Length: 181
Length: 178
Image 1 (tube, rainbow over the protein chains, first blue to last red):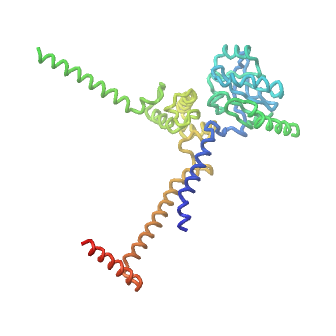
Image 2 (image 1 turned 135 degrees about the vertical axis):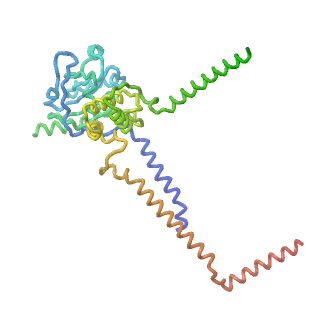
Image 3 (image 1 turned 45 degrees about the horizontal axis):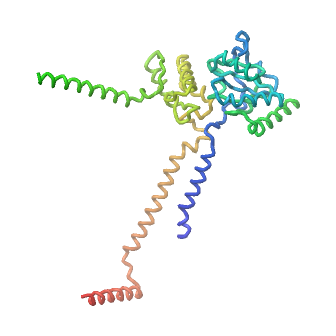
């Protein structure tokens, strides 16, 4: 009994150490979105390409799709951009853009110069839709099903790892569900 | 002449002193440290509610700051949103739930009691109870040990012998030294 007691500090140390080690691996930016399994919020905002054309929630529905929040002021978006072009081409998944708190001319020029992976772009100048979506930075990417329910959210750059590990399996699952129902 | 000079130096040092005091006052005022926005409030009560809400709500981007302190663009937008909701006449509860619906329970520095948060809320009480139990345990054991020592149970014959022996050898050694 007395011998065992000597090990108490060691046991406490190991327990505390492993707890703190786990804490190091956690990414504080990886927060669960409050909108998972909720409907995409309603909005009515102009298109980036054409200020006269208004877009709404309905325009994004019908297919399993990605909704990508981006802006020209966001360096990570530039990193992400070629990958978005690649997945639209290879995976035939529609990507809708939300141009978040941006300057229209800059964004239009960005798309002309770097290519346009988006089916359509919502121009969210004030960031109002961003707040409704719980956006707190760019890039952020949502996966919606054909009914417009948000099924997944990724904060940060979408790359090969994120796509293959999280998004692609879910996209295939949702497509299978859609073809059954 | 000399007197006048003295007067002026005294005046300027006084001015310097009041300036330093003024700067100190600004620095110790928490509002002076907060991010600067200008909002007009209908009344002081609404202003106070705005301050309370923005200090109780957490900035989602800069995670260790509240909305009032943060300079992040998103915190600015959310302050604007809180202001808008306040001027629409929404209650504090409605404003909080508006933000929780979008950013999750996470934005509240004081989250509501729920299956996910009960441990967080109960932890201080649980730890306090644990501490009490440990303290009582240790105190009892000490009391028992003290009682055992002080109790005048007579020594066994063996113990008495040993004591005698020790005392004897000690006195002998002392004699030798002397």
